[in-house]
Length: 233
Image (cartoon, rainbow, N blue to C red; front, side, top):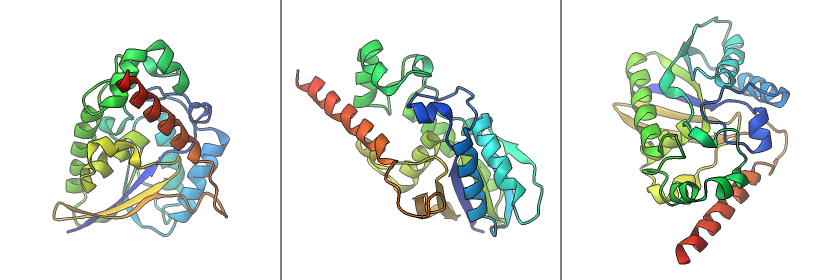
């Protein structure tokens, strides 16, 4: 029997707002983040979730709690899974994006060139995130066969790794998918095959189109250009 997964990124935190690497640090939601979670909950209020899973980090747990409160009158226990935690960025956590090229220039350049195999300083590689995240999602699917709708509240890196795995996106294009805070991604898993119907849906967050999320694209683009320059030297 098919399982429909709703992969939901947590709402905004202060470090998201400030452009800091967050990773395994337990940073709570801002007022904007709470509002984003409430808007996601409102958009999904008619979905009859049979289970709600969450990363143990409070920005995800608090988002999951808000979604749970409007889950068609149910009061589910939030199921915590360690493997849904965000990528561990090691010594980079708490630092702003632009600082890394100065403080950890070699490690940062290596990571940009091949994040699948290279790790942030003292952290984990994208390969490690992909392996634990996809294994956990497969466990969740097995645990919910035949029960319908399942919410999984987690982080951008985790969702990105799962989408790349499902869609078989070439690793050099790993940053081609942008995931906003409070975004909803939907896939039906039927006999181990993923049917992805929604990626980075944010229509519930703004009444009209908002391009503020393009900030992260500009950041990634600058890093890619800088890294290409370093390869030419």
